[in-house]
Length: 567
Image (cartoon, rainbow, N blue to C red; front, side):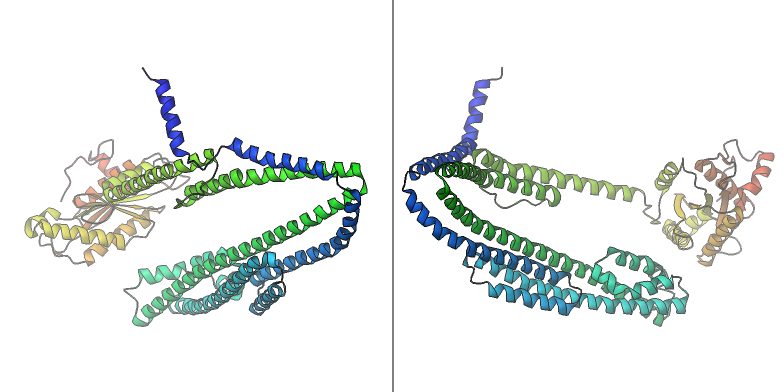
């Protein structure tokens, strides 16, 4: 049976270990914040018994000091307001000269107010920040100028490749970018980079796909274009970092100016408020009592607020930031706030272990996801031909079972492949399979899908296309394989490796057709058999041979060929 008393003692022991001797509970700090107010209230009662004449004499002196002090405070607040505007102008001024003038004005304002000893350290910090801001701003302007040069170079290469190789692109769009490029740079608009990537994509594809067939000048032009484009993107990224750093420093500096101004004004106004309260004390004895009670109430609130803010709110705010930083960026601080409140201290002592376990579990989960994805990718690629395998074809069929997209299916089989294996060996057969697969991939578009169906048989799925065009694609692939001129002594008169192609086309949208992708493959296989039986190295369309095959009983109701496939 579970011992509740033992568990309670163990919990109290652990709680004592987590609470150092120099920490106290929240109730203790609340008592400390109230006790000084009570003492101050008692002292104020004794003070009221002093001679009122002495207070009256002090009142005249206070009045003479209040107005100059108030004017000085207002001037200082205006100074901080102007300083914040000038610092903001260092960043937001579109003109480099204007930004430099704002920086010089900021330094001049700071040097004119060094006599304010209570904020001298803050002014030194603001001065250092403005120095860094002008440095970053100069670097940002230089980077933007470099970006303009890189864009000009990229634009020249785009025009040259367009007229030299007839690469299609929208000249009006490119001209618009060239005209408004500095506007994009100053605005830091992501649309600029998106426009660059969109309008240079045809040129990138052209250079990558045709790098082996281009002459020396064209290859050099492609190389210079890709280099300029990469430099442009790198410079844009650098400008983005500098812009973020500059804005972050501007926000920190303006926040520092506002905080310093607020602290200074509050301090001066507190002094003035205290002096004015003394003036009110001389007006009437009863008004003095009321004023003292109001001051005591305000003082109680301020002290309680200060105690709660310093010992409770500030540590909790820090812990909130720590937890947020861990959730968003997985950052674990080296040390914590070390609060004097026992309850908060206990939370701080538990957070490191919680962060460690959460981070370890998250890292493990990410690693497992990455490993699973890699294993899935490996399972869908044929080791020999490096194209997608039968498993990938099955997944493609499953994904497109309920879609309304139209397809044409080509089944290709290497002619006399068994003879090639018997005469030249299986290693040579593997080499032939790889070359044929590479040839099929090279002569199909990126929207087409090439699979190794099994053995020496391949499957090619084309997008929405007519039956005539599908047959043309099959003839083009067949001729491309024949042009490889791979020797095969048992291949008939040509003595080279050839393929036979069977084509099955799905009905286009709007036409009545309830066939599935699996039935298309079966029908393309029937057409492939007909191509084999008619002498190989040819392309046959299922729609042309289906009626004849059914007449002579060569296919079963499911569309598969009854005869043993030819080699």
